[in-house]
Amino acid sequence: MHRHHRETYYVVDEGRILEFEQGQAIARVPTATEQQMAFRFSRFGKKKGLPLSEELRAKLAAAMTTVGQEGDDPDSGAPGTPIPAGFTYLGQFVDHDLTLDRTQVGLGDPVPVEDLVQGRSPALDLDSLYGLGPDHAGSARFYEPDGHLKTGTTLGVPFPPELPPANTDQKGFDLPRVGETVGGTRADQRAPLIPDARNDENLAVGQLHLAFIRFHNRVLDRLAERGVPEHRAFRMARETVIKHYQWILRTDFLPRIVDPEIVERVFTRGRRHFEVPGRSRPGDLPTMPIEFSVAAYRLGHSMVRTAYQWNSVFRVGGPGGIGTLGLLFRFSGTAGNLTPPAPNSPPGDLSDLDDPNAGENLRLPSNWIVDFRRLFDFGEVGRDDLVVPKGEFNLAKRIDTLLVDPLAALPTGTFDGRGRPAPPPIQRNLAFRNLARAGMVELSTGPQLAAQMRIKPLTADQILKGRGGAELDGLTPAERESLVAHTPLWFYILREAEVNERHPGRLTGVGGTLVAEVFHRAMEGSRTSIVKHPGWRPSLPSHRKGAFTMADMLLFAFEDDADLLNPLG
Image (tube, rainbow, N blue to C red; front, side):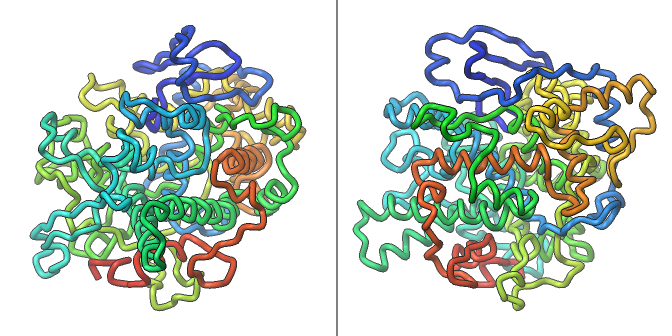
């Protein structure tokens, strides 16, 4: 139940579990144990939507994933506010934090009642980083004896030969991995030793997870230097890390992807639509609305680029060429095999990744360590010495209805299909998977939620034409009519961002409101919460007192050392 493309949904108050197998939906009555243990989803929409036909979903998915390198330009179409590319993968990291079922982390070990209850509900509490903590039998393997989170060591490789940091093992720059002692397949052996294997689905989110490991360890070291006893230090470190993380999301992440006015209204005046205070029982834990999980928060799929200026080796003009999206999948443990493609294999070929025994490497090669200066803008925190030339910096794609074409052919490891019979090609298309999943859970459509929330709906012209997004000229008149009447919520929310005149490329309307309110509820529902303590302010070193951004976090986690932020030079 904890794959990125979740295969099982227990929707509270509907008395059924929805399961997905080979593209088919099966509804069944859950057992008593499943009702007790299952991660709790809810249905926000008061009306179920009528899904588009499979033929129309396929046409729409094709229109959304026909973008190549040229179209993967943040300046194409209507202008938007440029977002550093690192926030694309911070968004993915957050998704896994929100949807990790902690009751599954214990691997069959007894789970305390308070963790059983809390673990079924979404909360922004970094359980994908901490699991159930170092004292729990199922999570102890993620930790060193002193409460530090484990890190891994990269594998020195002979390319490029004149670059010593790439040619030698680098301690602390890979995720910890299971290793050969477990036996099993090569995929089993290169599996990351972290609570949520989804955080190694691509190299970008994997390196970001490693940065959060370093963040925790640095906070723990700081407490030790101040003489805090070890038995108290871990709890204090976790609380400090979680609150600063929530602050980053509230002040640095959400205002980049959602209209800042919506974010400010929700966090200062409260929620108007989702689990509104006073309309539910006091103390109720939050649920995860399927409209958020299946549609609204899949906004990040449109931010993904075809390729990245990754480090000094893998960039335009570098000895390895640009770091393509396919290579970021390849050099991960969950979706990839950490091994370069075979000589003479077609560009972008990922077919060998479907084989769980393919690939020789069990650790990340040292030449693939990220240069964080290329993903986050350190000039925003006054560190011009850490700013790379404009042509070397990565911006996210504008949030709109276009996905880059590599997402039309996902590796099967990204949806738990490795080692199984190959699915039909259309089921590797991320846009089609999103649209199909929404139909399977009878998700409310965009127009239905706009009416329910009393938000001005998109016009037919905006839905069909947008502004610089997916072109739907290939649809028949009947298909156009059907799309306008039953616009899939995910597509609708991306169109809202695309035609947003005040903040182009940011979520607004239905999508912006739903995302901001679910984040607010998830922070409120966390045991450690800046929403419950509105007077809290960051205490760790930052560029400005009372502020704390992703750039500040990375500077602190990597000891304000340019050589650690960018080991390959």
